[in-house]
Image (cartoon, rainbow, N blue to C red; front, side):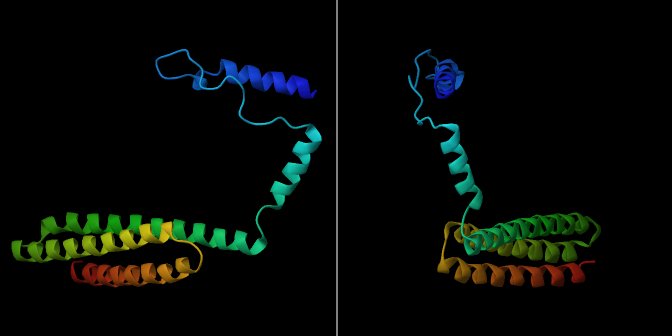
Length: 155
């Protein structure tokens, strides 16, 4: 059985169009770069992998992913609100419209700060992640309050 698997993987590597240099028929690889395992070895490895990371690490990873999704959704919502404000500006007087445009620019600036802090946070890990997360939350709260103020002023 192992020989059959070995032969099939080798055939696949040799025939795969992805295993070719661009604009050429030359192969990248003549042989597969991975070893072959018996079904029993595969089952043992799969069993180990299903246990995955330690529970506390999984929880941390889940929390980070959940926070990422939450912040990305919030950024999209803020963008939509800013776009709505900009659309509303057409019904105001010139002076009010100018005030609104200044506020919109300030909101976009603050949103940019949130995105910059968010990008820094994504690159961090360990203990610095928690510290940087606080920084993201602080600038996000600042943007949220500014957004609420502008939305209530320009109804």
